[in-house]
Image 1 (cartoon, rainbow, N blue to C red):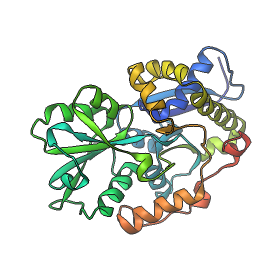
Image 2: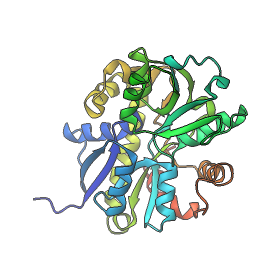
Image 3: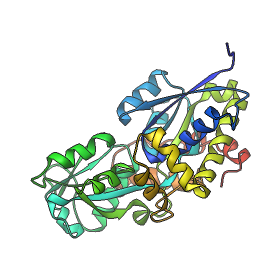
Length: 308
């Protein structure tokens, strides 16, 4: 019986969290061993349930949308952001039934996102606003929140084209394309190049009492991110099991183009989070109380792990 602490990590079955799958596979194959902690992985189907589980303490770490993580910190939860999960990685897909050719064609349509406190919401807001489309109930475009894994079903049943499309993490966009129900309109990296999205947050008591365990985890994840960049075929095979997705879809997400999603550059940059906070506070009004980002973001472990 191990007396090591257990780091319980929540995540979603999205390509954004593949570095966790690579670390899990290394441990299972004994290519790595953790000296200071044991890992337990908890998959969730949507962000709301993951958020509740994290607040309740059912899990003590999570790969989480950056704005959602900031909101947890705003609510005085004692947590720290220690690493990015990835950069880029999402896609705006148009619904074929909606017959959208230009950004103006989204007028009068709904667009789906995975969660209101998300980079997806920020990116969509930015894209629509820059093209003079107003967002909100009764305005040009209405935004609806749907769990990522359920979005392909919404596309399948919407043969009237009421839904213009969706902006979500991969591989769900590519799955909809594969099913012949949608087309790529824009990659998220083209709306904000090298944008952060999901981050790893950890309860502060784990950091306080088991810093070696957190360092061990962080170091492994940073190595996993670099492994994905240089071994896309092998990473895609791992993704088949970890994400329960088709290998051809995962390979496409990792390679077409090469920076569609990046996992080798996981160092949290304060300026990126200042940009997120300013936009969602001033432009969107989603959060009305700013957080102390310098206190929230804790890069010691990422620095020690050699993150860039």
